[in-house]
Image (cartoon, rainbow, N blue to C red; front, top):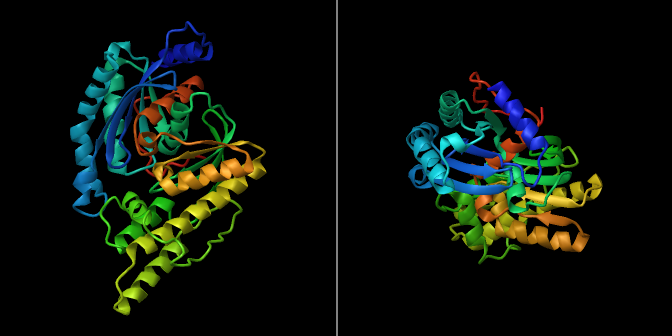
Length: 355
């Protein structure tokens, strides 16, 4: 298998227009989506299949790890088969396999890793392990095929808020991150306080469209670290403001509260991202992760890019949330560096993008 990986690395490194494309089957199962995709040369999506567990977990108001793992077990084979059918390919026509091995829920990750290790063993195809956060960054290569490093990327999701400098393919410098809650976590908590349905982030954003963002003034977080984020204080101030209104017997102006909270979070995200771009000497900013689908964040970033003259890359909406196409793209660039795994690969639930 090592020889196959080395041959693929050489083929990818010596790419010519008439070179046979490299096709990778990828699997993503880090949280509550089971996804499979076939990606060609890291930039072209031949198929993408996503089985979402949202309806299952909505009954409990959030992701239940044990239920998520069982749902992944049921769905892995089905999404892989469908991804191959939609790409019109057989297993024997693939060049490599890829799987998310962290960060995420340990049971969910183990399900995907075990599945792809078994497939690698039976097909003798090289297996490439991918960091989930790196996958989100790589989604931009699929949405903007002409994109090349270096650039700055803001990765914002339910569990992560990172500002990274992408030095090269599969090479990163961490500029800043949240020191407490992730932006997506803060959105979900605020949504629960307002009694919104799961998933809370999109529900809050939709409600905020009809609200007055000047209704509630929230504190401006100022954590240590020039590019770091903090959302815990915002969340606490928001919860306290809602409780005070309830104690007075006043009805909650939910749309106004949602708009005020969304503005505070987005302003913070934009402020640090703009600072990073201006001080990095780079002229391109990319967004990534589930929160990058937020309408206000995208709109505000577009305004800033026009005002300050930097290029902005926004992933397509379906590439913002968890999917396997982004994992296949990231795997291609790991393959270029000859990075594969053997059958001792394990899940790493607390995996970092930069050690």
